[in-house]
Image 1: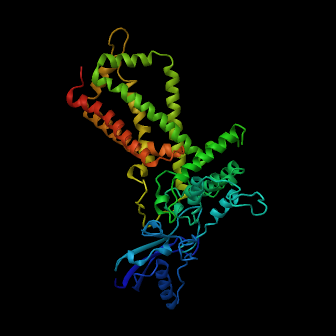
Image 2: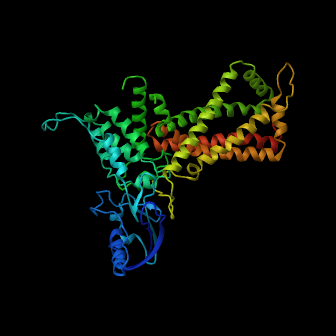
Image 3: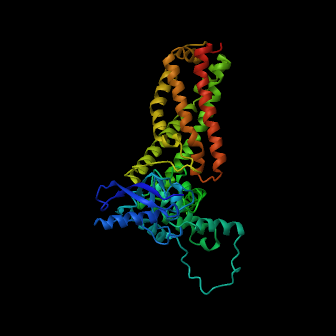
Length: 255
Length: 220
C-alpha cells in the first residue's frame, strides 16, 4: 500500500466558552501502518513548524487499554472500526485522498477543555459515588475462600473490561452514560463482595450520573456499537433492574 | 424528596414509567383491533360489542385509566426527550450512525414526532366516532357500524387513518423492544423481532378496516 495524502478537518476550540470550528489540514506521506494518533502528531509537527498552536488531544498508552483517546472520527466515536480505540485505528483503513472529520466527544457533562480534549471527570465522580467496595478486607485470604460461580465471574469480568473512555456517551444522541454506569454497577452486583453495598451503590451512582447532566437511555445501542471493549447493552438492562430493585426496597423500607 | 418521587423523576424511573404505560397501551390497542375487526365480519355483533362496552358503568373507570395512561406516557416521553436534548446541547458537524450491532433506526430517531402525532390523532379519532353522529339500530342500541362505514366513504378520512396507522407502526417498531429493555429484559434480538411483527400486525390490521370499507364496501 502506497503512502497517502489525507485532508483532515479538525475541530479547533480555544476553550469551553469558545464556539469552535472545523479547520482543514492537508497531511502528506501518511503510511498505512501509522495509527490515527500518529497522523495527528504529524499534523502537529507541521503546525508547530509554521509557528502556530498545535491541536490538543488526549492520549496515554497508545495500546488501546487506557481509555484516554477520545476522538469522533467521521461521525463515529473512535472511528469506523468495531471494538477499536482511536489509537489502535490504523491508516490502512483509509484511502488516499480521503477527507476525515475529527471532533471531540460532545456532551454537556463532558465540557471541551481545548480542541479535541474534553473533561471526563464526571465519570470519576460517578465512580467515587459508589463504584468500589469499601469494606476493610483484612489480609489476603485463600483464593477459593469466597466461592464465585464461573458464569458470574466471567460476566463480572466482561463488565470490568470497561476502560471509561466515554465513547458510549459520545455516540448517544442523549449523551447517556448508562452503558458506563451499567458496567460499573454490574461488575459488583454479580460478585459476593459487592452484595453488602449493592443498593447503596446503584442509587448513589445513578444520582451522581443525573447530577452530572447525562441523559436518559433510548435503547438504540449506538454505545455498544462504538465501545472499544464491546461492553454489551445488557449492562444497561442490568442497571435498570438494579436501580428499580434498590428503589423499590427503599420505597418499601427494606433497603 | 420521597423515595417514590426520587424514583419517578430519575432518568431510569421515567423510562420504566414510559415502558409500563406503553405496554399497557399496546394491550389496549390489541383489544381495540380485535374488536374493530368485527366491523368487517358482522355489523350486528360489532354494534352489540360496542353497546356492551358503553352500557357498562365500569367504562368510565376504564376510560379514566386510559386517559391516565396516555397522559403519563406523553408526559414521560416529553420529559425524557427534553432531558436528552439538554444532555447533548451541541451536535456533531459530521454525524453518522455507528451501524454494527446498533438498533438505531428511522423509527427510534423519530419517537418524539411519531408520538406527538397521536396528540392530534386521538382527539380527532374520539371526536369522529365516539362523539360522531348517533344512528339508532333499534332496541336502544347505537348503530356505530353505519357511522364507521359512512365515514370511510370519504377518501380524505381513509388517507388520514392509513397514514395515522403507518405512523403507529413506525412508533411501535422501536417501542415494543425498547419498553421491555427499559424494564431490564435482556433478550434484545428476540424483543426487537417480536416488536417488528407487532408493529406490522397492529398497523396493518387497523389499516385494513378503512381500506376494506372504501374499496370493497364494508361487509353488510
